[in-house]
Length: 277
Image (tube, rainbow, N blue to C red; front, side, top):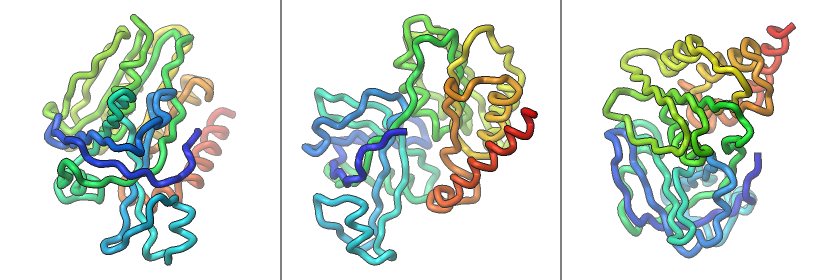
């Protein structure tokens, strides 16, 4: 995975909208976005920077400088969000933020933003884009993966076969996902079921077409772990044909998940190696 040096970029909110009841779409602009290196990948992400209340950082700056010059209690909190779109000519960066009322950090913040408000972020990073040499594509995820899935569908080669599974709360959260590919899109309404249960069920029941599949599977860590085992061990999808990761973990904030994610990944790899023997 590549990531731009962690300088802090300052942008302004140009406009915001609510495409679905639980989604805030932010369009950001400003002089510092000129030349933003977005376009190579469809899972480009930025990390929103949230200083503690009452703390202001000098600008320009970067995260290393902040951590060197400010006490730990004044370091920012970070939240990673996929870039939904980038209009280089207009200098407009679109980011989707899931909003569940007062829950969490970024959701309430995004809902309260107004045109002209300042937004700080680092990045972008990224690692995935649909391969043109795949026989077919598989994309699956929850709401956190939906912006990257939407961006990937827009980048599919013409008539490229793709099976897409997106788990959302209910039908009100569905949105148009245009693509030049031959897409079979299945919306999975979660209802009262645990996050990811419907995705695991759907992919286990999927009749895999012949040929090489390029798969993108992201979202809550528990179901991602199950689907990673399905794809890597049971379906023998080569590692280089698979982009799969836990974007978040139920019961943990983002800081807690980042602190434990490396150990979690190592344990998953050990489990897969044992299962494959």
